[in-house]
Length: 89
Image (cartoon, rainbow, N blue to C red; front, side):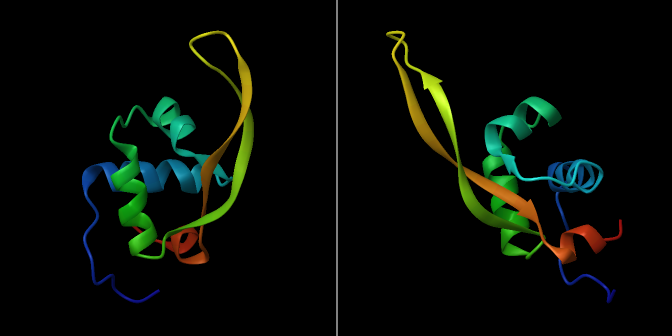
């Protein structure tokens, strides 16, 4: 792979390394729990910008409201691109 024309933040590096080891479709909320990165959405956005991660079909899950009502909700989901898999640190 050619030299990168961008520099990843420490959180972007942490997230991308996690994703390379756990190559799957992820929802932001699950990434927060798995990595401890509280501001994960801007980090995902930067990885999308650099074509290391891409949006995929939303994931539908059941969600319980504060009133105890169970509803289904679509969550944005993301996956590694080939460039993200091949990225070298």
